[in-house]
Structures are given as structure tokens and as C-alpha cells.
Image (cartoon, rainbow, N blue to C red):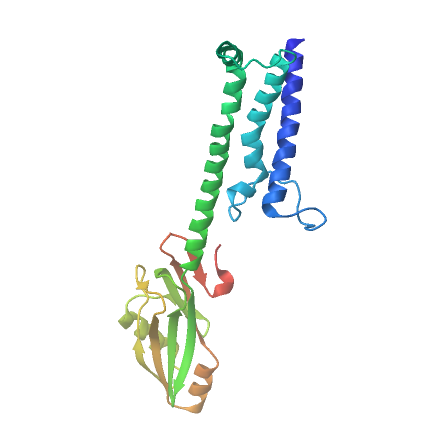
Length: 258
């Protein structure tokens, strides 16, 4: 019977603590169901919300306190108040269990706070990584009969090249050193009157700094058909790269790995 009474007190104390937690968070957020339709019972931890506005924090801190208070009421019900030294000693002696239960509110609250800080740290790391993410793009330019092909890092973080390949007129190959690439381009464009003025390799391990720009090709067209071919974007560059945190991406952007 005493055990059932204890369980009943615990349930009642939990309901009391839940009510207090709900009331405190309503007051902290200045929201009611009438004023704020988004206000609801929520025991989840949100990293973008202050700890004192979480119902779970107050529930963890107040439940042991409520249990201890209700048990104290049960223990001393009808005993009256004795403010003498003997009365105080009697209260302390008989309240060791309840005081111990009430003290558990502090470590429980600290534990919830620790979980909340862990979520905040993870969210901050995620935001930092996102803000320092590299973003590679390509662009083309024309100066008379000379066509320029450039690659840009428009992001805020460096890009570590893992692999790069070039597709021209249906043929595709990896970037090696500049001389090998020049020979391959000469072979691909053998039926067109073009002159490979410059080409730069994008080898694995190359780092493109934030906001940097690299000119990877400079090709001169010697007749109208060659100029038309180059202006229609016959060259495509494919790049796999990483940010400083090891997250992998691909260019073109529609193939980015999240």
C-alpha cells in the first residue's frame, strides 16, 4: 500500500511539474494559444532556442522538486509547525529522502542543458561548414577570334580538386599535365581550324582558393565554322572536389553530392 501511495505521489508530482513547466515556458515566450497559435506542448530540444524556453528543461528540474514537496506534505501532514531547534532537527532527520529527491532537480536540469549545448554545437559546426563551402563554376569569354574558358571558385572556402575531366565533341578524358592535354585537344579538333594557345591542368590535389579564378583554356578560331563550334559550348568540364571538412561535391552543380 505504501508503495502504491508513493507511485501516486510521483504521478501527481510529475503532473504538477508538467503544469509548472508549461506555464513557465508560456510566460517566457510570452505566448498563449489565443495570442500565439504556434504555441504547443513540445518536449524536443531546439538548438536555435534559449534553454530557459524549453519545457523539457523545466520539467526535468521541477519534477524532483515537486515529488519531494508532495512527499514532505504527506510525511508531516497534521504534525503542526515546530520552529524550535528540536523541531528543525526532527524535520531534517525525517526529510533526508525528500531533500535528496528535490536536489536531483539540479543535475537533471544540468543534463538537459548539456544535451542542448551539444545540439547547439552541432548546429554551429553545420552552419560554419555551409558558410565556408566552395562552389565551382565555369565561364566562357571571347576576345576577337580567341575563346577563353575559365573556372571560378565563387564560394567562401578553398576547393581541393579530387579529379577533373574534359568532354569535347563527344570525347572525354581526364586532366593530366598541360602538354598531354594540348596534344589530345589537337587530335580532337583535327578537322577544325583552331589553335590551342594555352591549357592548364587541374590535377588531383590542386587547391583553388576562395574567390579565385583560373583560365584553363585559350583557343583561337581560324574560320567561321570553328568560331561557331567554340561559341556553342563544345567544351564541358567535370570536376570532383572537397571542402576543408572533407565534404565531397561535383561540378556541374546539378550533380552535387550532399
